Amino acid sequence: MRVCGVMSGTSLDGIDVAVVDIQGTRIQPVAFKTHPYPAGVRNALLGVSTVEEVSRLNFLLGELYAEAILKTCRSARVPIKSVHLCGLHGQTIFHEGKPVKYLGRRIASTLQIGESAVVAERTGLRVISNFRERDIAAGGQGAPLVPYVDYLLFRDRKICRVVLNIGGIANITVIPPAGDVLAFDTGPGNMVIDALVRRLTKDKKTYDNKGQIAQSAAVNQRLLQTLKSAPYFKRKPPKSAGREQFGEPFVNELIATNLPFPELIATVTELTAITIAEAIPKFAVETIASGGGVHNDTLMHSLRAHLASRHLRLSSEFGIDPDAKEAIAFAVLAYEAHHQRPANLPSATGARHPVVLGKRM
Image (cartoon, rainbow, N blue to C red; front, side, top):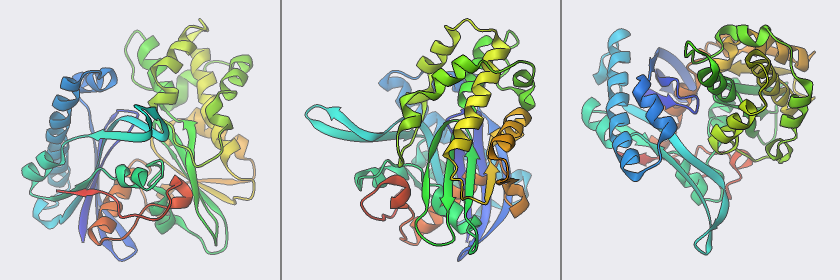
């Protein structure tokens, strides 16, 4: 079956579309393309605050997702009629996987927007979306969901592997040769770095290209130790993170330190590297990395140093484009949902039991 996966993550850098052929456990990439968000859309998502904005953005993103799917297929000369199904993650604008007190109840919740009905209407595809809600209903945190696919793609029968994704948030999947998979968000990936670059550069860069800014300054060790003491890093998994922990208030506190801009970037880059490394079990033999963070040379150099003898490899060595892996993952999750197979891992999300994910359009 040919399936497309559509992913737009917390970094808000754009829409990733992957097309894959799936037969049983065999996953063959066919096409991949990233479509940057228009600046106005990106800014609207960062500042969304009213019901009207949520409703309008929901339908606007549906249009943008549909256009991205069609453009990806055209550029790769893949007939849209050859695609049977679409897995649509949507854009997360709120995620609170741990229950909080609300109106007399304890409620966990999550919200991804990007109207699947619009995608289905514009592309003619069957669309499966809203993957996180069923896991939350079953007592999980709705995240992480990609570990199921990590297990299919990267499990080794002899050694323990860790699959690392460095997106806006960094997350790991620990895959032992036997036994339960463990997965959780380690903390910020690119999100804090990118936010500081956007806020503090005069030329309005959106990211630290290859980590050049971080490389130009020394890490402020006092600030680093303060950041490492944040409550999130002390919590035991399962746990998930997002803008609620490392968004605008967190960035504002960093800016308020009045440290030189390059020093801030160097410090938060090191924070990402060290919190990832400290989360990876000592018994893991290999770490397989993907996500936009793998293009940050300073981050990857620091991560290799912290991991020492534990080998750090890229997913491209296994035939999976590091930029495409999460979009591929949601294609696979849609495929599993289409076949009515559970695809959450309770050991990763904390759910009471496995469930079939997604809503069908």
